[in-house]
Length: 186
Image (cartoon, rainbow, N blue to C red; front, side, top):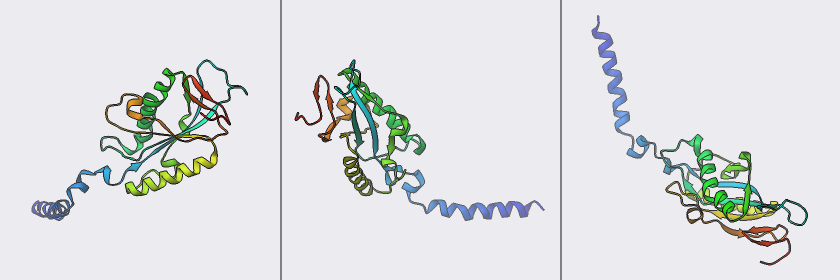
């Protein structure tokens, strides 16, 4: 009587094992590098430390857009935005603050892939999305900066390398002690 359940269980196990053995090694490991490509977009409000925002020194609207990276396997998908926010604060916001520039943003102003999709299957598709997102941000007004997103050891701006990639002449641009106001060349 007990032989039938044992034979059934053994048959079931043997049916499942070949399916597990035939899967590619990358699929078994659940490699995120094959499908979790993303970039981060952060809309910020920038002003100089110690200066009240008024018509003389208006707030700068600034977009930060990261490079395209693969989400490391040790970071769950749902944590990508949180990890990107921690990185952005430590390697962009804090170093700018040390130079006298306050970079403020709210959680909802940080988006993965510009807010369109969470997961992108290829680096090329993510790069294309990023290029389109930069073009869209130019039309929305504001200065656009790129920054390097790197989940390895971080050393502030030495790692993030923020760089102006588009200057909207109608926006102020706060760069440390140097201030370029709308319409001025810098």
